[in-house]
Image 1: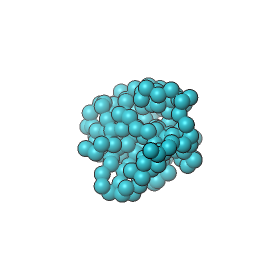
Image 2 (image 1 turned 90 degrees about the vertical axis):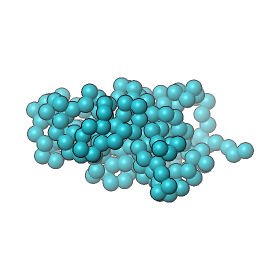
Image 3 (image 1 turned 90 degrees about the horizontal axis):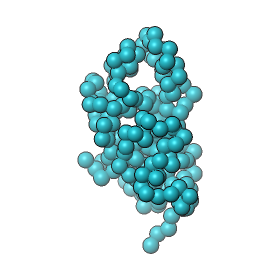
Image 4 (image 1 turned 120 degrees about the vertical axis):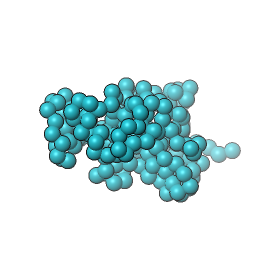
Length: 184
């Protein structure tokens, strides 16, 4: 496991890229070829029921009409990712944090639609991707803070509170962050 896997990437206040301004991205994979993460605090205009209908999964559970789908990142916005609690037990699942797994296969959506899915989940479309060395360069430029990912931030907080809580989990007060960092 890389030193950045299972970490939140927290955008610094000076982040100018609108895809990541005040963003919290769960880093799912990081190796010599690059990195892949899912942004967890950008609700889209879609609901889970919209996505299920689009891919032809029948769902009678009207409460899913209110479950937001998130903008996971600017890359391949047509690809779906389900972050969830519990073991990685679906066809295409892997652990990405303490009590956090990610699944990309249809079977988890079918399980959710039938009421047999994970206890807690977050659906995202798209992902954030970095080429070899790109994320490391951005970190050296003070674009990101990082901290161990926490399931309670992903699944239990409203989206608008996730950035501040992720910063606070580092023991930092949001008001003390400067838009740009310095170099010694």
